[in-house]
Length: 472
Image (cartoon, rainbow, N blue to C red; front, side):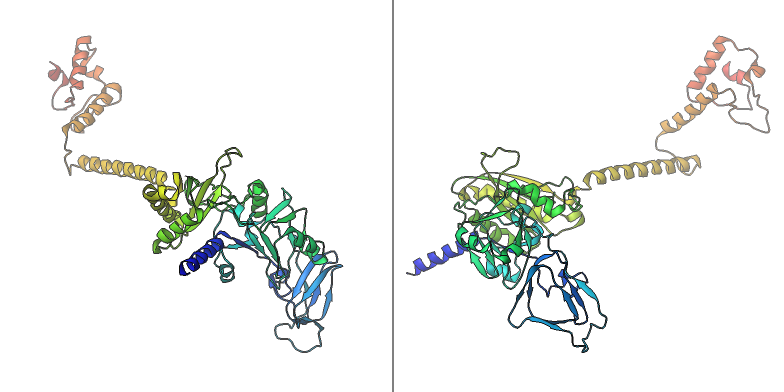
């Protein structure tokens, strides 16, 4: 009996781990300060304004005194027990000394396919405690096997326009009532409250069925990728964050490029996605050094492959590092996972694996190499200049005589080439400025001898002796 009990408990835990709960974030509650243009809840001296053409459902949690209120032509107030409105009696209300017109903001902007408007968790307890899971953008929006929750005692309005029109779900809970079949939901959707809560051309299909494949199921939102990214980023996609890594990549199902790592796995029919997820969680993500790493694991289909291609398991890793350290923890975890697959991959049914990495540590690698080379060259030139200067001053002798010889040879070549070059002037002895004046017309042989002598690298002009004596 004990063995059977633990087996049933394990199966319940496994089923719970497969289920994903998606909770809608925005609401149209009266007590939500973000729903008002003054970013505060109306007080006793205020005049409350709803646009006449505003279509809205508003949940009211408590009693409010107001100076006046203008209501929409098509809307409803859902009152909690004891909630209501009263006319302001003129008594003093702390923090409400000045009367103001406070308007309810437009709720038409909230879209079902906006990933930023959903929280996801693997259990209702985690959802209540704020322990949300990380996922690529397509999978942040409710998938075909997810349970969708609109919180009890909240009102909302959501645009369910869909590029594929049909929105597949496992279940949907509205105002505390859970719908697990199309028949039950079909009775609710025509009501006045449902028409105020949902608008757009989308239609819900509720199956009450979980993913039947232990290797995982695709989310089912790939066909809505452009709509999801447009809802998240706008049509221009200019809101993708600036990244600190070189060659960032875009995981399948994500709207923006990221820094970090992604691993793609091909698998056998025996692969169990939850079992392998638990392997990574317990063997690696539980380690303190990976505390800041987020992981998303799911079955996806590569966009460049055909619709009939075999899907792969995608593991996306991101960390909380910044600057040059961006993605380095994710890279280290990816390396650990790849090493683990080399040893234990067969036992999990993993056939092949590929990894892609982008970190901040390689974003400045090329620039750093170039900068180091330039600095090295500048230092070398500076050192050479200092050595030449000290040698010219006679403070040091160069280690090689060839450098001095080349230096003097260059000077002597300039003497031959330039008619105005005079060697050096000595004020005690007169050196003729024109060789033709001192020697007259030189013969061809004498000229060649003179050039040969100069090219030897030892030629110099000495005013104590006549050049003709040296040549002779």
